[in-house]
Length: 308
Length: 225
Image (cartoon, rainbow over all chains, first blue to last red; front, side):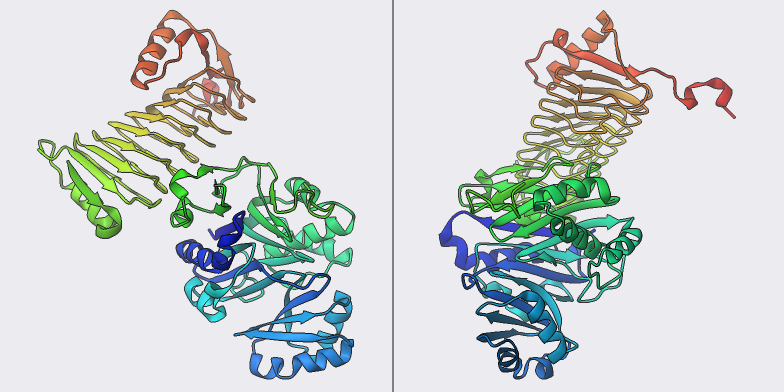
């Protein structure tokens, strides 16, 4: 199974309530995925800055003094906000590769959840309501976000097997379904030098999108070609800096419901996830077509990395 | 009219209450409020009662229905009226995938669109859709009628048996062994009755009929055991 939720706000006055609304949607999807939960939020960020969300199983030891150590190593300002097992490291700038190298050197057991100007990803094992409480997701604001509740089928229930997966700067992916050619595709991607950490099928899907974009494809093109190259069942929701996208495999047995009003565009695996959104009774509600790539963006002229 | 607040009273109580109605009950009209997309609303009914759901539902609304008339003032999730035996289910909005799957009888009316696999393995139900239907509809459909006033998606009627398919609009593609067939007077008569029961203002003459070419493996007697 698995549950997916997504919310893209058109009405700025709703932005302080994004975390609260997404948390309610996420908790409603608990019975589709009680194993683990995660959320990707696009909130405040510094223009030209770099924000890295890091995770540790021993946050007390790993995050102590990490900001100053990292600032010293990178020669840039670093501010750190710790939320439970995750820490958001806000840097004035810098190359991600250098940041990743410094992090793995300074704190070898710390894992990187996301990178970007505005993206933050939080995910852990446990019931969605508990995961949401650990990170205080309700208190977070932002322009848009996506969330996932996991019922594991293809790999172990671990933090790194939870969704969303970071696919590139300010980009992420959540998945409902299962990919059946992930083992061969993982070998192929690793040969191409793409980093794939776990035995999880969705991570391979995410790595596939990253690889296609490294080759010069736009996110829209990468999603389009995923319809050819990925074997299995999927409804994907992808987060981008300016919005989100949706694509379902041609068989489309994994459910998807969309709702749009002049205040927001919302995605849910089921209509249940949407019932508390403001004005849902008057919303346009529909099911996205199979094998069709959809995008919503705050940016009237999307960059080449996100345009469909 | 009996009103049942699903949010306050719960799903189990709703279905138990509706199941408890005898065939000669005086409480024939029921209204369900606050459905909030819940699954399995009004499932397994077996009495000539009329249930109106005020809002949208989740999976399997009206599943296994016998005798009852169920109206949904909203849209329904996957598997509406799955395995219905008799009675009528009317959806004012859209229906998600596999609407009316495996249903043996009764009438399913969808006033909006139905998505993929509408009428999959239908075994005698009449399904009337005012809008469009998605891909793989009437897959392995065995008996009954599927009427589509709009368009049909890919692979309509794949591996079809004896169900009749009537489509007014375009058909994106036909599935294996499904072909267009001649619309004879007896088919027009059947279709007129279906359109009237479905509350459609379409004319029977505007439709095309599709059915099985009976060329697949199991139609050849030499393949019988």
